[in-house]
Image 1 (cartoon, rainbow, N blue to C red):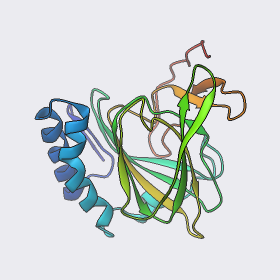
Image 2 (image 1 turned 120 degrees about the vertical axis):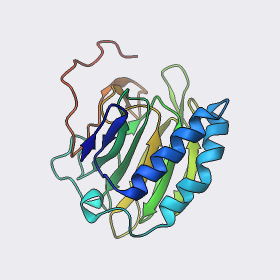
Image 3 (image 1 turned 90 degrees about the horizontal axis):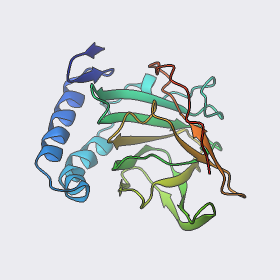
Image 4 (image 1 turned 60 degrees about the vertical axis):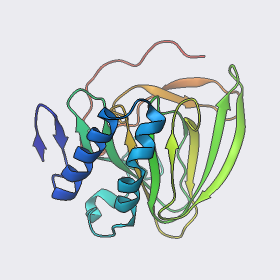
Length: 208
C-alpha cells in the first residue's frame, strides 16, 4: 500500500493507478456529476469486464464486519481529501445489506455473482420502494443523489457477489443513514472498511 498527498492506494497496481488517473481527469473536465459519470462509463465498464485485476483477498467474505452477514467493504483507493473512493463490496450468498444511503454520486457495478436491488425514495420519513432490478456481472449504473441513493442489495447467486463502487466521498468512513424498512426511521450508519480503519469521530446525534 502506498499513501501519498494525493491519495491512498491500498491496492497499488498499474490498473488501479491508471483508472484513478483517468477518473480524476474526467471529473476535472466535466461540468456536472452526470457528465462526469458519462465520461467515466467506458473505463468503469472495462474494469468490470477484466477478470484478473482484483485479487481474491478483496473479494473475500468478512465474518466480523459491522454490516453483518459476512458482508465486507474493501477499500482499494481513496483520495487524500476524501473526495473519491474506489472499493469492492462483498455480499455472501443469501445475505443482504441494510437499507442505506451513500451521500455521494458515482458509479456502482457488479463484478461477480448476481444481485437483486431495491431502490427507495425518502418521502419525508416514509420509505417508498420505487424500483426493483436484477444485476448480472458487467451491469452498472450512475448513482446521483437523490436518484438511486437509498437502496438495499441482496445476493441471489450461489456464489458470493462482488460489486465495485466509485463514489465521491470516503464512503466507508463517512457517517451515513440506515433506514428501517417499516417505519422509515433512520439511524447513523458507518459501514467501515475491512482493511482500513476509520477515525474515531462520534456519530451525528440527530435522526428523523
